[in-house]
Length: 259
Image (tube, rainbow, N blue to C red; front, side, top):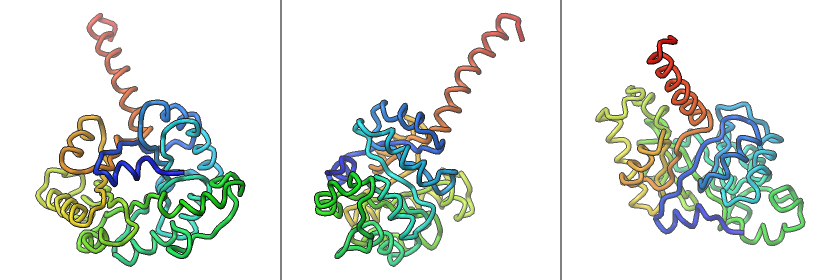
């Protein structure tokens, strides 16, 4: 089966994608046609149920986009259900220790490396491809864990060293909030936290991930050393497009004396 994103990251190459917050297959289908490496369905903060996840992933089928899901928590049932829907990887929030990272990896992998239950779900074409899917899965699945707290930051070297962790991902809002410098991304405390994550991931040969906000910040983060980078979300893209379009219209109307 393979996982193009995981292969790129293993080679040290950047992989850029986008969040899906809007639980609409039309949005997933539209974004999947624009050259992104991956799309991640967010279930931590968004009202997306598992039937909707399945339909969002169906909408990506036929493209080269790798489908991922951020689960709502580090729960083996949530991870199993996301992967059974057809995701090729998971992003697990609020991972604060090596033990929690190892639990996330175990939930994502089949025995003997993990504890994921085996079933003929959409992921294996309802069992038609189950043998082949099972045989390659533990090599194909992408496991990303989020560092979002002071506790996680203190344990980031141990987290990055856990076998099976592919990405250590910074959630800048939560990490900056937990450091007491919310959205102050140029603050020395936040900058040092970012540097520590980068040092840890480099030392252990795993990818560093970051939630950027636009094309300029994506490229800046890649130059900084991050290789798994989000360009933002569907809601951010829609909001930015609306602001740019209607801002220009308002300015034009003002220049013409209509405002």
